[in-house]
Amino acid sequence: MKEQFDFYSKTVLKSYNLDDKMRYQLNMLDNLDVFTRKHCENVANLTCRICEYMHLNKEFTIYCTICAYLHDIGKLFIPPSILQKQAALTDEEFETMKTHTIIGYDMCMKDLKLRPYAVGARSHHEALNGTGYPDGLRKKDIPIEAQIIRVADEYDAIVSKRQYKSHIDISDTLEIIIGDSKPSAKSDALSKITIDSKVGKVNPKIVKVLLKVVIDDIEYEIACLYEYVEYLKSQVERLEQIDNYYNKMIVQKRDSKKQYFAEGIKVLLDKNETMENYKDILYEYQDALKTRQEKIEKLNSEIKKIKKLKVCQSNMDLACAEV
Image (cartoon, rainbow, N blue to C red; front, top):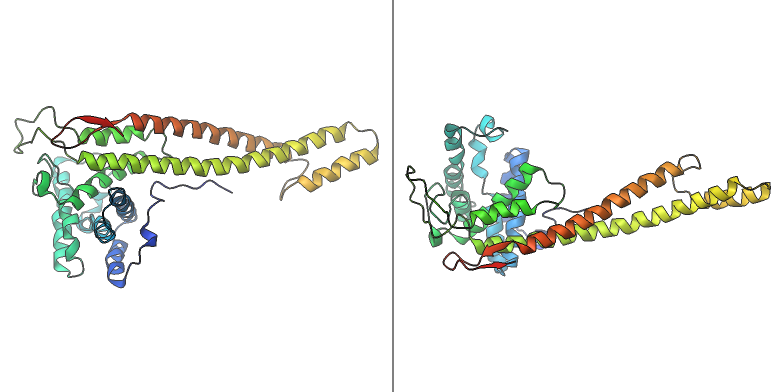
């Protein structure tokens, strides 16, 4: 038995009845490289959950989710040398990477089945303060679905880059995204982009919802760990009882007494366990139990950190509040 959790596991996507038309759109992901495809799936799942936390209706939630699945479809035509580059992109390479928004938009517009979702491909890198691309849209000119996808996209990109296997220290990721929701303290005078200093890049209301989604995920991870900890405790208790029987057995002088404890040990031994190896297995279970208990403590501490993070309530009202 192993504890199981996933950053995106609490999505309700599987409960939706996706018809053939929707399946056609999702199948487009099969043409992407494995990393981009996984990213698109993660962003779609997270987008779906953000929509639900925002109490958007089911139809719009499905629409946003499909948009998110297709948001990076234009990367089909980005050279692998750029798309999969581990080091920082050069300015020229970044300009090439940015074209995936227009390419994806054109792909969707040319296909009647994909056309309704073209906005996700085009506008998911737009920023409320006008510093995004490809159109430099601002505030309410950016469709809400694109605003949601941008937050989900940024979160998954950082999570994937840092290769998190757990939510421990993920508050650092959230602080980065919260920083993007705050107004810029300064603007680049040499930039051709006119920055709206009253707003940040991403919608703080959506960021606040993201934090609640992440807290929900951490609590789910803790629940999985608790379940596994109970299993580990039962195994440790069983093996400690074997150890107790073994210690009593080896000090017995009468064979009948030795046999009595030996039979008790046999009953308690699990598959592939013997009198010769049970102690090593006991130590492994004890170490695993300690590790999981420590992780639970760290995750509970992480929840406390996240709940103390402050997100501005709105773009126009910069009064901040805790999550």
